[in-house]
Image 1 (cartoon, helix red, strand yellow):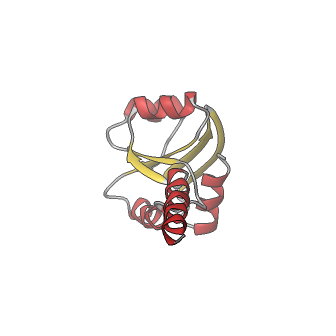
Image 2 (spheres, one colour):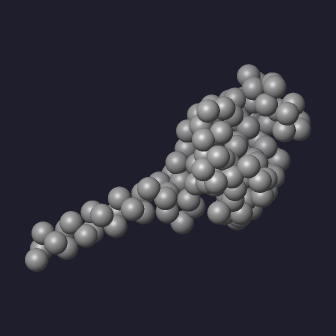
Length: 125
């Protein structure tokens, strides 16, 4: 009986983790795969020298593995991904763009408010 309870608890934990926020470095392949699968995916245009980006990163890291904020967060190197910035009309670091599949659901720039960042990520679900 106890082994069944433990097995069920492990299964539930694994299921919750499968839908929890996953944070990865940006790659065009991962973005494309997530969008084609119709999954929630968010881009965070981050620069190491940017204090706002670092503040956003701290908030996102708090949600890593949190099932209440599902989806994938791809961290885009603001200084290197010039073509992607041009393609998406990103003019400033600390820009966050949330998608459900390939449909843009939210866009924030320069915002560190926890509630607004959460709302942006959740809009992609």
